[in-house]
Image 1 (cartoon, rainbow, N blue to C red):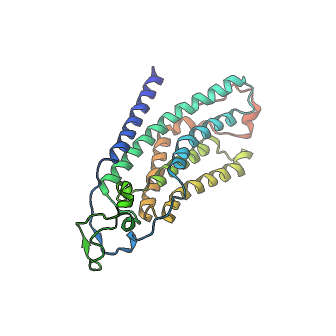
Image 2: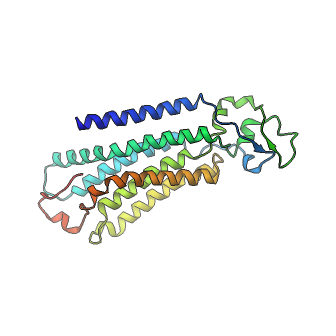
Length: 270
């Protein structure tokens, strides 16, 4: 019954998340004023370096795969049946993913609400919209009433004022920080050969990839610096929130060299 409650809870969160995404396509973001010939909104359109599918693939599949493999590595060398090892790793992964995906959906709803309510223009706003008042306006004056004249890319209008904050930065940092914290809590020990080099190396690679996901949005002119910074911070805070509630399950289950010398009776799957 407890597992059913968890599944239903996550399902409800994901339904809310998809509804918020669906609604964003129909809700017009707040129309904000902008400065005439603002250089921050005058950048040219460039293709995305990292696509949306790749970001969701990273956020949806990296954590469960990392946790499952991590639990298998944690039990490696202990005298236990192979079926027990795989089943224990699977149960541990599913238990932890409940909290991860609950926060994932919640952060997604927050991101969608922020994009619609803030209505921040993207750096490529002028090229996407081509405001009718832009040609005859006076420098450093605010334009509050305008009409977009670029009819060739009308289907992209809904995204021109959803810059704050970066969804790419949010999702990549949330998943990356989550995996890094999992590895730290699960494997960190002063007496383990594995953690002396490979653990910080793997964590560094994951963090570099995660942060590149946000930085790429600045390079391809899809977001301002503040959008990426805020998205990254919220993503990291989201992962910390997950681990704040789960730390008690990990604080007494660290890996040491002696762990691989016992008979497996003290192995603690989570």
